[in-house]
Image (cartoon, rainbow, N blue to C red; front, top):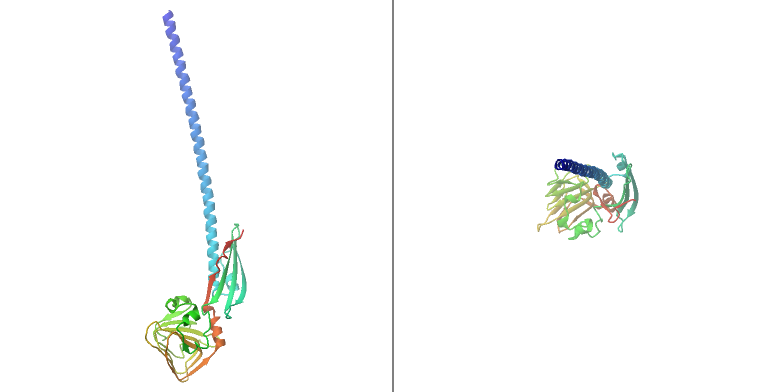
Length: 300
């Protein structure tokens, strides 16, 4: 009886021990599952917070880029348009744009315009301000010594460019061609080769609408009854010599200049006109605009 009782006690005791161990394991598993669940939820919240912050950051950066592009677009338009015209054509209703204008004069009486452009977003606290300067591509008027003559440094004086660095690209509004037959009305022409002008080609040219004509490595000829108003610039990049022909009853009102010696066959009238050249210099087709370094900044 004693042995049997002892064996039964040991069996009951062993069963309870296994039960307690099982409960302990379940408790540990439950704790681990709770920890894993908490960690998963915490990680998920952090991921969501990260994406929310990243979304806001990207949206802010996109808005900043749009504001900067908006300012650049306004500056580009101001090269040839008035402030009122530019403001009337703005199609982004989310931006508040203000433009301050100062009309200035250069050391040699060049017409200069200073712009301060401020742009802000109507729903976000983002503001930018930048300053720009508009100036004439025809930086200086030909000197009396340069008019109707030649100067090897001509392009440096007129355009602040060496002749090797000067091209039609410097004049965005220019018309390029290889001859002057049937050219369309324009304020700036860049001709590579010979140019023969007749009255129909220059019907739009006048005292109030002068023309800037570049002829590169070619002769210039004005036919009878052809009247040119403006500046003829004959450029040579070779050792060849070129000729300016002005027929009887043809006129050049303004000036012609060259960077190399040329032959001239003048049977018509050459009339200096400094005031007309100033009108040409101020023409919007010759305008350039640049940002003023160090003036682009955020407005806090």
